[in-house]
Image (cartoon, rainbow, N blue to C red; front, top):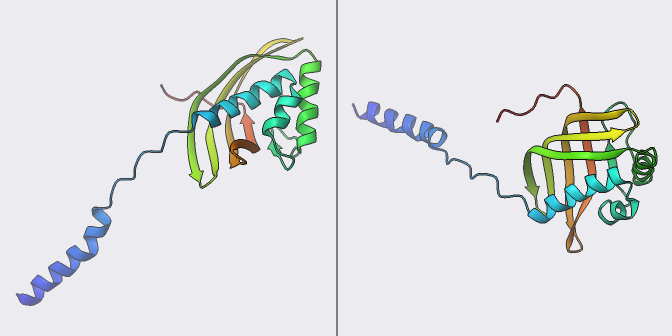
Length: 159
């Protein structure tokens, strides 16, 4: 009987840590200043505002756009922004229907979905996609050193 009791205690001791694990805390709120920088970068890109982009994209920026384009440097990104704007393209609507964040010290990675409506010579087009964006707190402000976007075939999130 004593062996059975010790065996039961041993079993409970082994199982309880796995069954009574604490529930993780919900994600902390995303810094509103970071979200402002993110939206500003998107709006600046579509507006061809390379001066504003230089204020948030560092010299070592890496961008991965949707499609088969190669990785973009800061100079590539500024040139693409200017070309979009100079061709008559404009942003009609910008939305981020879903955003989640992971914070790693002074770095935050956003994961989410975007929806944009663009206007140009061929009319309006809506593009939906997913994003991964990196932000770093440096010199007292948020910088946006990288993004990765994909588009097309992305269903809208359930509401």
